[in-house]
Length: 205
Image (cartoon, rainbow, N blue to C red; front, side):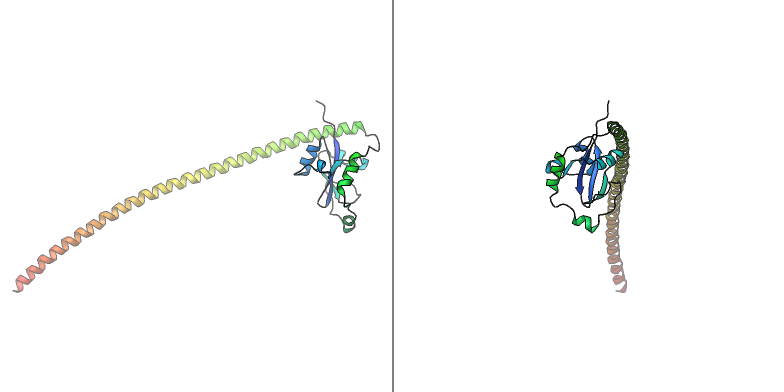
């Protein structure tokens, strides 16, 4: 199956302009971690800047950054913007995005390079999917291990509680029996004492 042709998309997020070579707007939004459709809102667009496209196509599927408002090259790791570049940041990004989206390509793209970038993206996407599957399997294994540990601890707790109740019940019964023996001894002593005292009084008389 032929790899899907890549396009380069741009947006701004926080202190950075972002660019990525991806097969679709949806893939770009997922890579950016966007919670809404920035394209429909006018805050993202397909890039027609040859320099941006070349940089993104060189690293397909990787989110590239540059300080917001600057014209510096997009890189995988970019420094924070300067105060000057922040002051120069356009205030009407939505209008700018729509204008850029409607612009026509400035030159014919290198189809061979684009095919190579698309193939590279597909290869790296398979690797990313494999890595995600590995991480999900490890997470599932960790959850299973944690659940087993919780179940074991809960079972031990229930067993200990049952043993405690059994021991407490036996001790309560022993205590009741001991109390009855104490009461019986008190009654025996009372009767014996009364008899002995009576014998003592009789002997004195």
